[in-house]
Each structure stands twice: as structure tokens, then as C-alpha cells.
Amino acid sequence: MIGTPPSFIPSLLHLTLPSSSTTITMLSVVFQPNSQPRRWKSSAVFRGYISHRGRNIDESKESASPRDTEGHGTHTSTTAAGSSVHNASLFEYASGEARGMASKARIAAYKICWSSGCYDSDILAAMDQAIYDGVHVISLSVGATGHAPQYDHDSIAIGAFSASQHGIVVSCSAGNSGPDPYTAVNIAPWILTVGASTIDREFPADVVLGNGGVFSGVSLYSGDPLVDIKLPLVYAGDVGNRYCYMGSISPSKVQGKIVVCDRGGNARVEKGAAVKLAGGLGMILANTADSGEELIADSHLLPATEVGEIAADKIREYVKLSQYPTATINFRGTIIGTSPSAPKVAAFSSRGPNYLTPEILKPDVIAPGVNILAGWTGFVGPTDLEIDPRRVEFNIISGTSMSCPHVSGIVALLRKAYPDWSPAAIKSALVTTAHNLDNSGKNIKDLASSEESTPFIHGAGHVDPNSALNPGLVYDMDTSDYIAFLCAIGYDSKRIAVFVREPPSSDICSGKEGSPGNLNYPSFSVVFQSNSDVVTYRRTVKNVGNSLDAVYEVEVNAPANVDIKVSPSRLVFNAENKTVSYDITFSSVSSGWSSINSATFGSIEWSNGIHRVRSPIAVKWRQGSSRESI
Ligand SMILES: *[C@@H]1O[C@H](CO)[C@@H](O)[C@H](O)[C@H]1NC(C)=O
Ligand SMILES: *[C@@H]1O[C@H](CO)[C@@H](O)[C@H](O)[C@H]1NC(C)=O
Image (cartoon, rainbow, N blue to C red):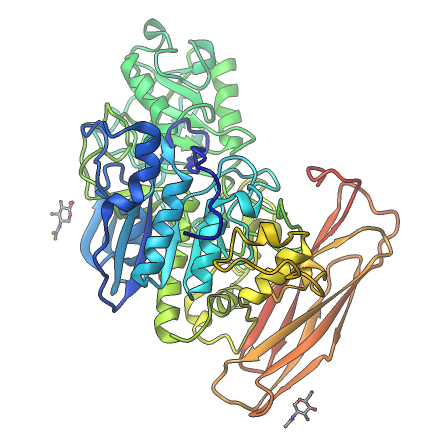
């Protein structure tokens, strides 16, 4: 067992899709490139579930085995390491060759989630088993609901500490609780935390109003199209319930009509099912301020499309002001290109600042997590709704659950390329080579605000697998660094004992009372206590380039109202000095700082002319003690 295990807590550790009441259960997926998995005892990882629910698993609903009867585990594992498949598609949407990130890696699946949730004891048992089995990467599209629990009360953080001690990279979803700040989970510094962004593929389905107005939306609807006449249009708020809960809309008022349902409240596909059951012929899923312009394509059970907040406001206005409002929906299939530009950060992607330790920037990176095609179970339909009779081999779904396995697969490739790199070195390579520009050459935008995204939202930026293969320098860390970090945030030997296998000595923290920001992390998050505060952090970089002789110079892109000094500003590596340290001093030069603009962002970049080793910088001025006051 891992240290002192926390008492059995049947708390749910699952992510739910945005604006959805359905639980997205999932499997923890672990895979190991090119090594034979050992046999494992399946009973070992079910005990938490069984002790809470009993042995009577309803096998018509879910399998009492590692078999995936929900779809999420198949989707995430095939994203990480699925083999290449020709002509894969969902109802001919997104058709083409599909493959996982590390298509030659092996997958071992450990079932930790059930329809009733994911049990902490099962998570820990699965991670222990995976460590024993000798896996190289653990991909966990699972997270706590609500704010991130304290590290020593977080089964994923505890299991991940042990895994990282064994050289295993643990890659986790940041959560789907955006766009509010402080929502990211799985934020321990030994975890690779992944947010979600869009890709350059869209499934357009336009709303055409009776007055000629055309609004672009997205959909994966695959049945018969709407007849090409304008159908009567109603707003769900006028005929029962704006969110279109099952059974809440009045059949006599929607029969033969298209219904505008607001996003939020229940699952997006359930709204369409509710309209269909009430006799409606189509649905327009209308975004609100919470989802902004974020569009998620769904395989609706009736002709339906989702439109962004701006279009939604205009459509609702049209329904209100028009005597006989009508509309139709034109489904336009799959389009790949640069309009709209990509990547953009999903509104649902959970954000920083780090709720537990604001001195550590989280999430670390973003990766594709919107409208992702990957494998699916044959047990349930693509919507996971009981009333959905369809069965598919592939499905297109969205979430940080989808972005995490992209990164896990890339990690497997890096692990194969550099078998002796530590998990921290691999994370550093991904962080310092991430890119911040979209495919139109502009800074990556946030779909929640349509403004430029920030490191609190996207971390270092979008992962770039090829650049990560050749990062030049890495910021390395090991268990002793993480223990020093725990000491710095005030943990004593008793709390540290939760993470380490050998009971630590009572003076484990003596001499380690530095700042948590001094952890050798590949990014910077600075918290100023006043308008004239000065903070200095030390970092050590290791030359992993082809040549032992290398000279790197720093380029500073200081955040507004911050002065930055880097010393030395030139790092000389040679056969004798493979690692070199530098100090970076941040000085607040703000005066009369307003509470509206309390964070600024920048970066530093070390370059030898070949490699560019970039670390994002986020700076926040502390206002009072409230964490929520960003
Ligand atoms: C590709 O897949 C689609 C949908 O499953 C199918 O209709 C079509 O015949 C397939 N084409 C080829 C060349 O296999
Ligand atoms: C290695 O670094 C040390 C400490 O900075 C320095 O004194 C020494 O000269 C360096 N060695 C070489 C060969 O540059």
C-alpha cells in the first residue's frame, strides 16, 4: 500500500460534461510501449466498489469486469494508443484514417469508475497495480468534482506521487469546470495537467431563419434532413422549460416545430431527446454567457444544431418579435480548414490559478479536446442515452478527458525516445516547447471570452510533439524536490508519510522551508503580496541537446508592471557542466494596482540559436485573503 492510505471515501471523482447532469464514468488507462504486461488479478481493483455497493452489479447496465460498457474508457485509450484504422468515422462525419498518438504502444486498462462514480480505494489499488505491472505512463481522465482536494486527501495525487517515484509519467485531465478561475483539478506538481482546446475540423450545421438570417452552428446529426421548408419555431422558455428537461415541454405547443433550448442544466443531447419525445421536429441548442462561442458537436437524435451566444441571442430575439417565426437547419458535413482559427481553449476547460498552491502554474498545457473522434463501445449508443438505439464503432465527444490521452500518447513516444528521462524531464520538454499561436498566426484565444487566452487558462500553450522531442534544456525534478515542495507548503512528516513508502524521519523538513515557487518547475507563477514586493526563484536547467557544448542566452518578455532580472543571463554548458542554475527576480513596479486587472503575463526564453526553451510567467497581486477574488 502507499504510505497511510486515506480512509475509504466513496466520493465521486468524475468529470461531467459541461452543462450536463449525466456522469461520465471512465476507465483509467495505462499503457506500456514494447514490454509484455504481466498477468493481473482483476478482483484486486474492484474492492472499493464492492465494499460500498455489494457484489450485485446489474450486468445489463455495466459489466462486472474491466470491460467498457460506457464508452469513455474506449475513447480515451484509443486516443492515446489506438492502432491505425482506415475509413473510420461517426455516421461519415470526420471520415478518414484514425490513429492514436502512440499507435504502437500497448494498453492495459484498469477499471476504476462505475455508474455510481469512482472509488478512491479503487483508484489507489489500480495505480499500485499499474506500478507493479511496470507501465510507463498513466493516463487518468478522472478528477475530483469541485475544487481540488488537499494533496494528501487526493487519491490521484497520492497515487501519482508513487508512480512518479517509479519513473511513470501521470497525465491527467484538468477538469471540465471552466470558465471560472481556480477550477483546475489534478494540480499536484508531479502531475501533468492537461486542458482542452479545439482542432481545425468543424461539423457546420446552419440555422436559416424565416427572415433570411443565417447563423452557423455545429452538429453530428445523421438522420434524414429537415424538409427544405421553414418550420414553425418556438422558444422552449415559452413552452415549458428553457433547458428542455425530459418531460418538461408541452407536446401540444411543440408538435411539428423546431424548439430553441438553452444550453445548461441537463445534458445537451437529452434536450433534443426531450423535444423529440414531445413531438418536436428539430432543435436549436442556444448557448448562454456560460458557454459563449464554444460549440460542441453532438450526435443528436433529431435534427439539431448548436449555436454560440451571439447567434442564440439573435434567434431568441427573432422568435420574440416575429409573429410567425420559422426556421430550418442545413447540415454541411465535415469541414477542415483555418476558419474558424484553431486551436482555441474550450470554455469548459478548467482554469487556474492553482487553487492549492498559487506559486505553481496550472494547467500545464492544452491539447485537442473538442469534437474528438476515437473508438467506442458497442454496449451503448453514441449519446450514452438509454433511448438511443444506435451502435457505433467510433464516437465524437468533447472534454478534458479527451485532451489528456492525447498528451499521454505523446508522453509514451517521448518515453520511448528517451527511456532514461524522468517524468519531470518529459513534462519540461512538453511545457517549454508548447506553442501559443493558432493557425492564423495569432495568439490562442479563449472561447469563453473570445479574448486572448492566458497562462492561467492554457498553461504553457498547446503541446507540440515534434519540438518536445528536441527541447534543448530540461527542468528536472525528483522525489526529493517534491518533498521539499511539500515542506515549503507546510506539510510535516506525518502528512508527508501519506506519499512516501518509508515512514519519513520527523525532521524531514528541517532546512527545507523555502518557497513552493522554488520548485524546479518549467513555468513561473508569482504571487506578490504588495505593490512593491520582490520575489526571487532559483531554477536549474540540464542540457539535453546533441552537443555537450552549448551557450544559451535569455530573452525576457516581462509582464506589465513587473521588472525581471535573470542572473546569469548567459548559461554556458560543457562536458563538466551539464546542469547550470540561474536566479530570476520578479519586482512589482505597479502603483495603485486596480482589482480589475490583478494578473499579468509574460515569459522567459532561453535560446542557443537552435532551441527555444520557453517558460510562461503568470503574476498575480494578492488582494486580501480571498482566493476567489481574481
Ligand atoms: C467507409 O465507411 C462508410 C461508413 O461506415 C461506408 O459507408 C463506406 O462504404 C466505407 N468506404 C470504404 C471505401 O470502405
Ligand atoms: C563549470 O561551472 C563552474 C561553476 O560555475 C565553473 O567554476 C567552472 O569553470 C565550469 N567549468 C567549465 C569547464 O566551464
